[in-house]
Length: 334
Image 1 (tube, one colour):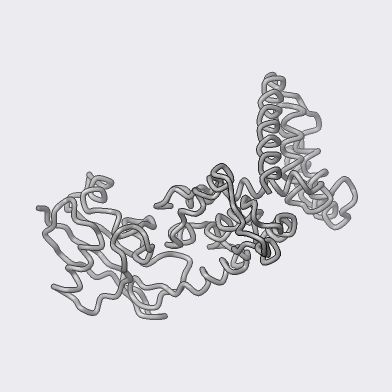
Image 2 (tube, rainbow, N blue to C red; image 1 turned 180 degrees about the vertical axis):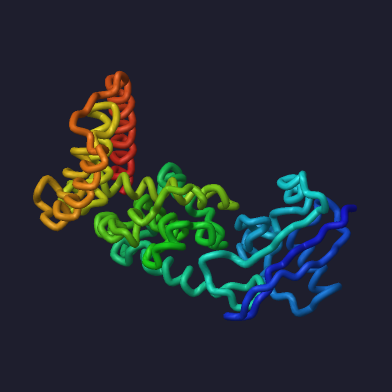
């Protein structure tokens, strides 16, 4: 048994949050959820938190434990104390999920979370389901492509830690885009082209900053960032550079690195922001920056290719060939 102080961030609605400490004698194997249950049953019946299955299935007990989002029924005291083994006295902090309004204590309002999920239309299209003669059967290989994203339990951990959600209120979030990829990869769906067009925006995949926080905290190894990257691959394979600045940014970055081993910054800004003189407002926005760089001697007047350009080019070719093969496989299953 070990004596542990549980510091819980408590608040009600818009009130100022305050920390409240509870002392428990627990075993190392005791889960955080069982510890919260004991606090509520033995010390403070007013403490509010969500729970249900207690078996990492429902996602109800997601909260921030020692600064990261996790399932309280999955994490135990020993694991948490080992993360901070240098503590003078054993202590575990518990807070509500981030990026969501707090209703009370550890209970958050999930409406924005569900609203953003609904925005990506995470359902097989009705037209694709209209097969009156027989049910729509999938091969084991086609079904296997849905396994990883199908493991999502909608716990909200990825949404809580998402830096893009924190700064861009229009971004739908990693949970929604992981579900969106499930529709893109599902060969029963016939709306792939329109879906990719829908997700091709700053509210969609281009709003992701690739911080990898969602992958780090996902308790079910759904890897939302990986699914977002796969949607991007589908968009890039179908869209040309004129469709958006985000598309140009990605394609020009790869093209210039492939060309010279690293980015020629002069061409990058001109090709992406100014769209090679086709975007007049973009070109105008570059002028003040260019003048400041010239004045400070930071505008490169020449470009020296990297000594490893040949190796870099071969690596990019190999990755692009692999991505093209993966896309062909997805298209053939659709």
